[in-house]
Length: 148
Image (tube, rainbow, N blue to C red; front, top):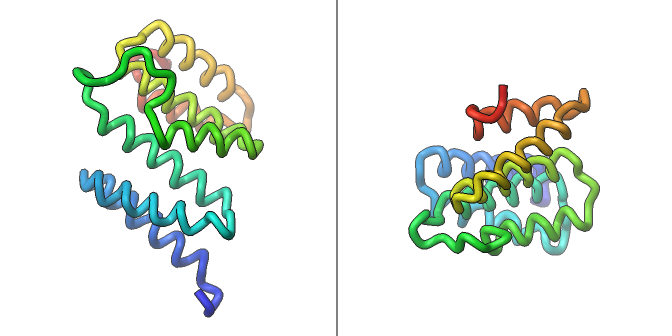
C-alpha cells in the first residue's frame, strides 16, 4: 500500500473474487468482496464499491433457494439494501439500472413475473441513452425471453 500500488492491489482482489465466483466458490467470493468492501469504510472508493456491491447482491440472490424464499420481500436482504443505500448517496445511473436488473432477477426467483416484466421494461428504457446501451446486453443476458 505504501508503494502507491493500492489500485492495482484492489483490482487484483476484485479479480480474485470474480474468479472465485465463476468457479462456483460462492462463499469464498462473497468473503473476498465483503473484505474489500470493508476496506473502503475509511477511504471510500465508489467505483470499486460499486463492483463489490453488485457482485455481493448477485451472490446473495444466487444463494437464495426458491422453496424457502420470502415471496413478499422487497429486497434480497443485506447486500441489496446496502446497494440501495449506496445509490442514495451517489448519482450512478448505470449502477442504478444494473441494480434494477438484480431486482428483476430476485423478483423472478420469487415468482413475481409481472414485476419482472415491468422492471425489464424500465431497464430497456434506461438503456436507450447512448452511454447506457451496454445495459441492454446485460438485460438480454439475464432475460433473453424478454429482450429482443
